[in-house]
Length: 591
Image (cartoon, rainbow, N blue to C red):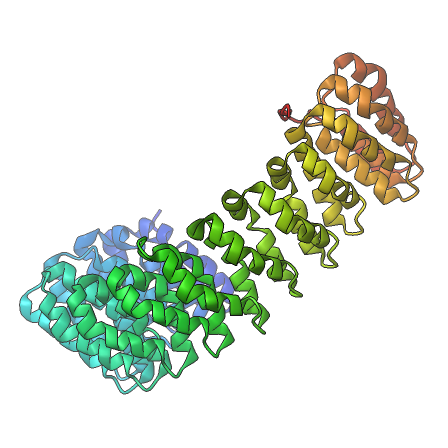
């Protein structure tokens, strides 16, 4: 059955926006029903004539048209889709224009050389000379895909048109051109391999845009600088780009400096080792000292990557002499966002600087940050302890940081306590059983009765991981008695925590150990006065993996009793537990 266009028209003209959106979802089905020829002759013209809708509908249409090449007859007829997308590319709403441009770029790749010259290049010319700035901003993204195997005159015209857009009176157009300059430079180089075209035509545009009176234009030239630098030789970079880059790093607008900070590692890769030493190391240190908090914070996030990318020869000296003194000041920065950003990466300097420098210069900074009043700072330091341990060893770690860790384990911010708790299995494995028992075991047991549920829940998982690490004998001595003690606590929440902990431990225990050590306490709690405890008993009994004989003699009778409980929830979970599968076992290491 052929789907009539009239039906589509009625659906798209429906007053309800959602109905029109739903009809667009069926657009491909409709095109298939119409066939390639009717889609080209009827559907596409209709869509072109009715582009007057709500932004959500136009956005959906712009996206769908990018998938339409096979439905109009393949690449030979791809140009028929240009007309509606050209209209969408001039819309006032930015997201619609962006989606239309994205679809145009997809369709451009399907064009043959002759179709590109006959249909796509004229579209670029029309958009470039449009009266509204919207068409001129959209077209900036299309030059790189159009710069292909075309006659020399057309390619010359494309470069000329792009240059005109870079000098447009409207800042939004110059901004769009600035953002696509690097992409266009890459396309030119890939096509012609002529460095002179880049030096003579693209670099002057870059310099002009980098000196634009609008900071929104200037900041986008940083990305263009990265792409252009990948093409030019070191001598050309030093002559043409380095002075402009230096100006950008000292720009009066913090937004431009922020962009330099964000792209500084990419700039490192693009300009090479020698120029990094000469230009980027001073720029990086200046950005770390910037007057704006946002710039210092963004630069701090790049600390580890920037230092790793420095040339290995002389890297340690550069960090110690030029970067670390500023980092020491940032540890006490007045802005919490700066300190938080720094705390997230400073630990990673340890492998770069080595054991001696880490102990002498970095450890004092870590201790300061572990005691910082901002919880996010403490959290970031704790989360990266593993990288520090690999460098300084567990003895130094325990002497220097364990006192601070113990102090943080009682932090008033529960997320800090949670972070310490989650790193406890790793610390336990690194410290060994004796040191863990002496320093941290008591903390883990305290977390089981923390007033925050998330801490109690995480503590049960941690206890299981510790049992897996240290073995069953340790569990019998250090864990089981303290966990089972909670079963007699007056607070029902602690009794429930005990059950949660048993749920985790059962995954690491053998069937015999579950029966001997845990099952009696679980069954005893089936008589608890609180329904929440009783239905958690039912859930626990449904999860444990135990011998069939014990299941029949002890577990099922308890569950059947619970299935007759006066509380509906207890009955539900008891009945569910009678058919619940057992959990997989976890291998317990012998310590």
